[in-house]
Amino acid sequence: MDSTTLIVIAAIAFAMLVFNAVFIGIIFFTQRKAKQSQEWPTTTGTIKVSRIETRYDSDSGSVDYPVVEYSYSVMGKEFTGAKVTPGLQWGGTGARKVVERYPAGSQVKVYYNQENPSEALLETKAPGWMIWLWVGLIGLDLILCCVAVSVGWGMGFGG
Image (cartoon, rainbow, N blue to C red; front, top):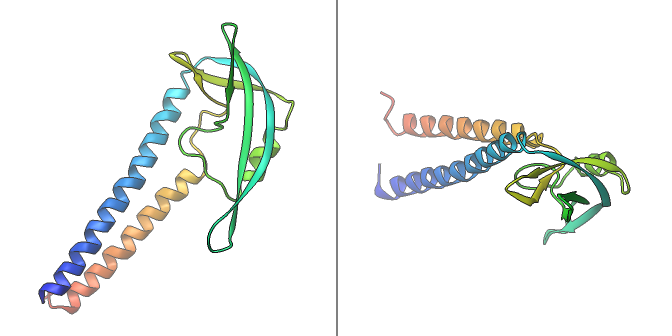
């Protein structure tokens, strides 16, 4: 095997390690925040804004994002929140369902961080896309492992 092939294989392996580290970090951060928020006290809030925001990218595609803003009070002080679930906010096919769950003017249960009441959520469980991120990450890794084995086998590493 020549040095160029080894460099390419090493570069792909390094890129996959970085890719995995980023996505596993996102998954663990979101799971940790979800677990912490289940211990948070609650208060009643009011949905002020509930709408879909369509964002366009350079390829003329678009993605819908839910925009949900709510007000709530903790010990007489007013706060405004915009996070629905723990972790990153993502758009896509579920955006309309989020907006339908939280119509403007409705009363909602708001979970807030007692140490920092400006940090709040409407839901304490990790978003549904989290399982698909795990499945995608594992699937991609398995495919790349199969490719690596077949390349290695073809180059004489398999016997």
